[in-house]
Image 1 (cartoon, rainbow, N blue to C red):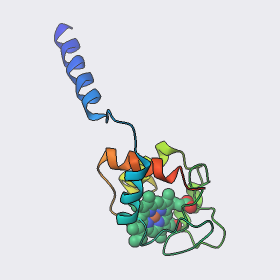
Image 2: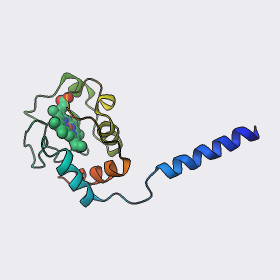
Image 3: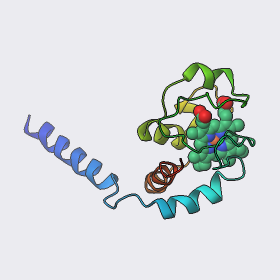
Image 4: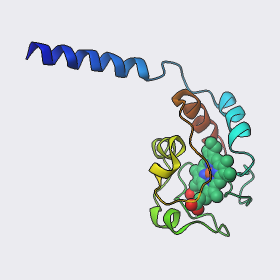
Amino acid sequence: MTRFSTLYAVAAVGLALASPARAADPAKGKAVFQAQCAMCHQVKPKALGIGPSLAGVVGRKAGTLPGFAYSPAMKTFAKPWTPALLGTYIAAPMKGVPGNRMPYAGLADAAKRADLIAYLATLK
Ligand code: HEC
């Protein structure tokens, strides 16, 4: 039992260290967006590119921007994009929404993802 609690404590410390201690920074997130997302996504409302506009994406239901030809997987997914859900999707698009067609490998860096999502939340 004691050994088990020690293991548990070690795991808890590991988790605490893994979560970023600093606040998410939308200005840094904008730079991440420009480097990794802007070639496919516009920030002007309703604008269509290779991907749908991400203006107002936080709170928008997945697969519902009018005029964009979403994959059947994204249309079926149809959940509102919360910051947590966006995090899962951007980290690993194929795991977040299996079968979707976004040609993006994923952003592994949790701090960069948090910055990026803070920036997406500023897009109205
Ligand atoms: C090479 C092009 C490309 C890149 C790069 C890309 N995306 Fe996408 N994105 C797409 C496509 C295409 C879709 C539609 C996928 C589908 O219908 O299955 C999409 C869909 C999305 C959606 C769902 C939108 C909705 O209306 O439901 C979000 C959110 C998203 N992308 C965020 C991002 C973010 C953030 C980045 C940068 C880290 C990024 N994407 C990089 C092409 C791209």
